[in-house]
Length: 316
Image (cartoon, rainbow, N blue to C red; front, side):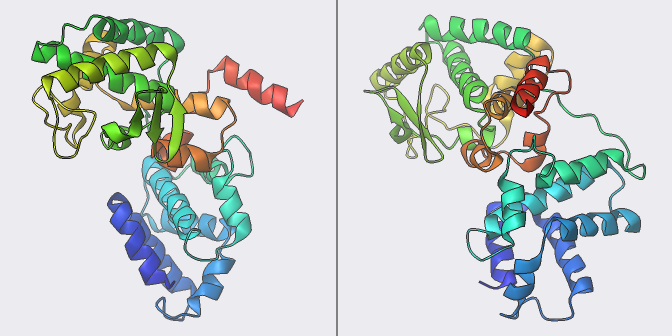
């Protein structure tokens, strides 16, 4: 598969990375005199390694294309996602592919090397990232979600909206699934009999309490005939699916009341941080959650003593 085909297929799935992949294509043109559409490009493509991608990052920093750490991290994440995608369709450098797929806690992982350089680069301005929730905040939120799901007074549209938001919050906390992937779930992904839910190909057992809550909610929806053509799980009281904007779910509103924040990212980051602590590889986390490299990297909490202990135990 030639470069242009891989690039176009990738951008169909990840259109937000268009400018970053365009920049990388420009860099390739400065490094290679051949046509990017030529079949012989596969030889060059297979030789690209982490050092090559690092040089492309430094090239754009020196040219002034990237003035902030956030833009540089976005570019790095886009390349990581791109080459991971390309590895499914053509032969890329195995060392690069393994470095991208490995757990980011490893010093030799692609994203760790790129982000470490970015953090130390004086030419880039600092950024403030949304932090993951802490344990106390999670416990507070779970108390609230259980109140909405354990008291099925859902004939009121507002109460039903709270119950749906609570279900979404719980799944994000548990599996680290992004809002984009969450709203894709339909009832065919739910195994009512055995208490499983399938997310991006992974059949996952639901905790007992959540399994009971989801079954009750499903029974209510069936009795009320709340449905739509897509058969999606997450809808309003009238069967309209959640929209692209997170506000349609109501979650930002409830978070604002509970924790004085409207960012769903803090929930997702907590869920992903638990997956990282469990030693699950980046490649699996990406597939399960739909999260980008940048988002996953931001889940490593600097003040997380449990995570530090886990790293030290594994090193010992």
